[in-house]
Amino acid sequence: MKKICIALMFLTALAAQAQQRKWENKFYAGAGLMASKTDADNAHGLALQAGYALTYHFSRQWSLMPGVAVRNVAENGFGSSADGADDDVFTFLDIPLLVQHHVGSGKGSTTLGLGPVFSFCVDNDAYYIDAEPQSPLNKLAKCNLFSLGLQSSLDHRLTNHFSLGLDAYICLTNLKRNHGLTSGSKRIHCLTAHVAWTF
Image (tube, rainbow, N blue to C red):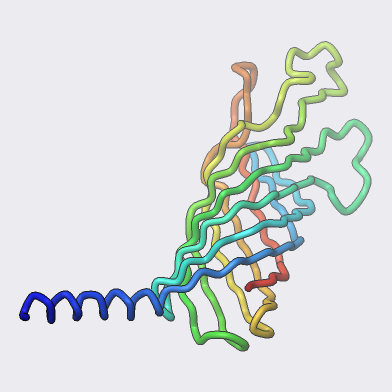
């Protein structure tokens, strides 16, 4: 009888825990600014993103959100390039894994997130040195295929399903692909605002 009571208590605890857990789907799209930092200079431009995330709630306050997103960054994205300029344009496939803290629930709630982002360059740009048409760098890829970043996020629920938010992405690794012909580093950071649909 004692074993049965213990088993019932254990099953009851599991059932209560299962009721607290919740899965949520999230689709989002956003736009904002990018900042490219190199050893020689800095550049700014446009950043666009769209993605999907699956949120697993451990409790009312905490959740884990893995996802997948496409992020496009373009130097001088707001105007035409100067003559001879070699502005960078890259597209990344991002895989974020964010730990989230929830303040409230449903309409009017706020969510804060932080975690690593694993990025893969799926549309690379190539070097083009206008002043040196015979440079061995010309037509070689500029960006490393893999990079690691850190993302923080802020979401505010306008309704039970729609939210507005901000995402800040900090590149932690060198993006510049030197091919043994150059040196230096490059990092691209992004700040975007997004709209999201959660269900």
